[in-house]
Amino acid sequence: MDAGTTGEARKPLLRALSGEAVWPPPMWLMRQAGRYLPEYREVRKQAGDFIALCTTPDLAAEVTIQPIRRYGMDGAILFSDILMVPWALGQGLRFAEGEGPVLDPLRDATAVASLELDKVRERAAPIFETVRLTRAALAAHAPKVALIGFAGSPWTVAAYMVEGHGSKDFRTARGMAYADPTLFGRLIRTLVDATTDYLLAQIEAGAEAVMLFDSWAGMLPPGQFRRWVIEPSAAIVRNVKRVHPSIPVIGFPRLAGPLIGEYAQRTGVNTVAMDTAMDPRLAASLVPANVGLQGNLDPLSLVAGGIALETEARQILAAMRGRPFVFNLGHGIEKETPPEHVAQLVRLVRSGG
Ligand code: CP3
Image 1 (cartoon, rainbow, N blue to C red):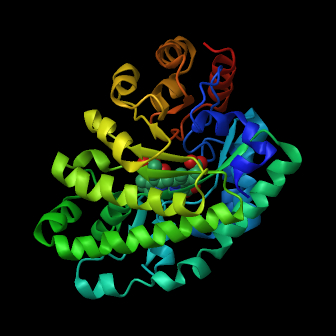
Image 2 (spheres, rainbow, N blue to C red):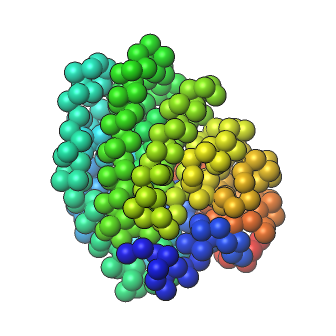
């Protein structure tokens, strides 16, 4: 189901992600399905824990579609988590209430060698089924909405796998990358292969674009950034495009600063997602004109709403006019966000600012 060869290539989001300056810009929001929505909290309760929600296809498809039903975004993003790849590789994972993700930390050669690359497709099968169900539901009820698949990038996923939990500096993972680059490189290569396979399976199930989340890219100095962020991301993009050349790929090198330019040139992504701290005009000057931009409203301005929200959103729209652009946040939506502020933002973006 290659979007480029069907009439569905007319979906505004896919046009923008493929390099067309569509105006008003198409939009979706990172973490648009989540705890700020009462209908999400209801399904989450029904599922029990978070992993059960991600691996129960009819419930995961339902929460994927909830924000589309409520707001009519241009993109639906598969409901899952970047840590489902380590989970599918066999690493112990749980989401502790109020604590975030907890993994059995992976610190030595034995642990890296025990990862089961050949089990990823089988274990992640319910996630691909979610993609299939969601795509069918969109085709029936929202034919202009594109379905986005995703994965974490190797660096960010490895950081959680080594650390074993969220962290403000991921010092164990960053330390391992210096102290034992051979072992760390083996982990990264395993993740390149697992992520390639995982994204290809999502595309085969109906994902029309894919996004690589590199939330912790900005912690690395330039040499490490090239080795652990740019090179593995470029390998995944090459692998995916070899099989599906017209599938748009979005990369999100969060807090990369000026390295966003080199990332855009060397990874081969079609669109670069800007984080909250990035100046859109600087990004526009650093990123080649044929690469799209996405972003980057501060999620806290969406919590505030009103004039603050309007001012911030309008500045981004003014800076991006004339470029291939997708309106989004600079990071995930906050759980305190009043749902009516999202409706206010959709109206504003639809008017072109
Ligand atoms: O955007 C979407 O709506 C799609 C689903 C999605 C989730 N996580 C659902 C989720 C996506 C794309 C992600 C990506 C993700 N997960 C990232 C990269 C983007 C980013 O935010 O930087 C990262 C680093 C993770 C890892 C992760 N998952 C953390 C740190 C947490 C705990 C923090 C929190 O908000 O609770 C999660 C859990 C998680 N993933 C939730 C959701 C909706 C909350 C779980 C719940 O409902 O209890």
